[in-house]
Image (cartoon, rainbow, N blue to C red):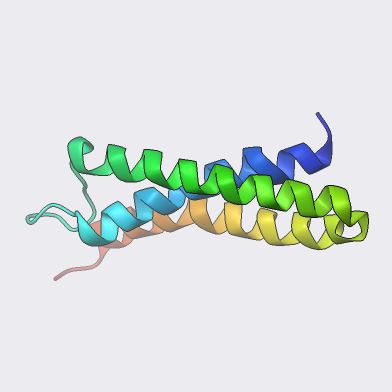
Length: 101
């Protein structure tokens, strides 16, 4: 698989899915524990986020194919966002455990 395909639809879909999960953690969290989200509340946000990420990924793919000089910058941006999208929920759950209310 070419790098343009990885930074376009594949990585952006993962970023969107993680972003949907973060949105669910912000706005659909359980009342008792802020670090937990019910599955029924998080799954629609997960799918909607991945759908939006897929569309953004198609735009990134088209831009990288049209202007190949953009590929290094797009790779850096997408890699940074993917790392943040993966670490953010883990940090949220960890902070909920170790920080007293």
